[in-house]
Amino acid sequence: MIKLSTKGRYGMRLMVNLARHHKNGREAIILKNVSEEEGISIRYLEQIIIPLKINKLVKSIRGAGGGYTLGKSPTEIRVCDVLQALEGTCSLVECVEDETYCDKTKICGTHDIWKGATQLLKDYFSGITLQDALELTDKKIAAAKKKAKAK
Amino acid sequence: MIKLSTKGRYGMRLMVNLARHHKNGREAIILKNVSEEEGISIRYLEQIIIPLKINKLVKSIRGAGGGYTLGKSPTEIRVCDVLQALEGTCSLVECVEDETYCDKTKICGTHDIWKGATQLLKDYFSGITLQDALELTDKKIAAAKKKAKAK
DNA sequence: CCGTTTTCAACATAAATTTATAGGAATGAT
DNA sequence: ATCATTCCTATAAATTTATGTTGAAAACGG
Ligand code: FES
Ligand code: FES
Image (cartoon, rainbow over all chains, first blue to last red; front, side, top):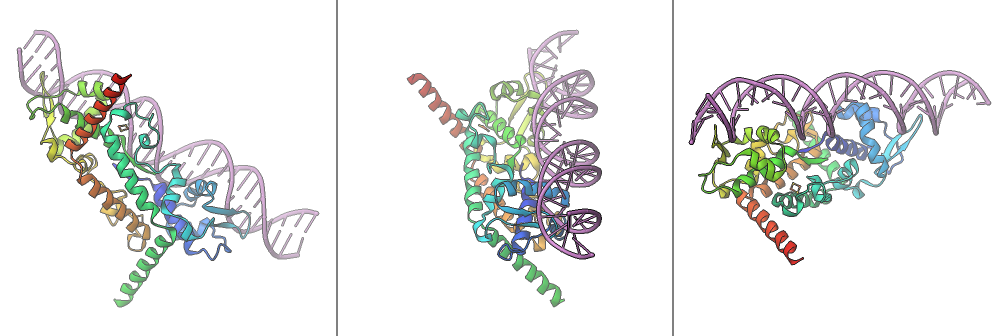
């Protein structure tokens, strides 16, 4: 009923992957690698990265030796920035941003409920940076490796 | 990126409408009325109400003079119950409920972020009942009326 | 400078899912 | 019997998800 689109899901994984290989933005990362590492079709990644580029969250470098780099440091990019870029808004229902979307906004009680939930999510996603997401991932990878070794 | 489906949106409005006309469950409300009051196609409402019926959130009475009533009192139905009924789960991404959905759950940092957000929403929607939603709506209607009169 | 390779860019199309409408059968009240 | 209503199935329209095809820019080797 409430669903994060695959665009959002893949978009974040793409960004975390770029963050992992981000050495001060001096090395370009090619989508082919991201595709292989994340198991997401390269064609689809190409579509997803467009709005991220438009919103300056990534920079593209064409030609041989090219690829993508983060537009800013991982500590400066928040989850909400990524989600926002990927669809222009980050609200649970259209009517939260665009009060004319539903004709009954003025007398709809559920509207206020969705609005509250949207705010909750926004605050949550504002408090998490790409760096946090990367560290979370790295920690999980390390734990998984340790576990595998213990066997 | 994160979207409440129309099923969820309409489903809640349907339930609030039933709650408004719920006189201890003695009067059946017909979808035709809900359709007119809420501006939602009766055919679509019929589809949406099926899972609500299966989950005993509404009762149906067939034939002439029939209709629907709430399965329990509005104070006993929470928003999360309605959303849960409408799609069987209430999580932002599949992998929160079904860890095998993504193959990389064990090493995916974003997974934990989505999980946190899901929990946030669940808690929020658990704390709001149909009664609350109804009161919110009635208050808004009263305010709108007062404003109209003042003119 | 030229051709080749590597990469992003743009457009088109296919598949799957969600959203919405339609027709008619089953049920029960009067 | 008739009428009002839910119930069931089909299907159309729109959107999201995913793949394919071709083109254009940049680097590099000669
Ligand atoms: S105003 Fe948009 S759901 Fe009620
Ligand atoms: S595990 Fe499902 S999004 Fe990463």
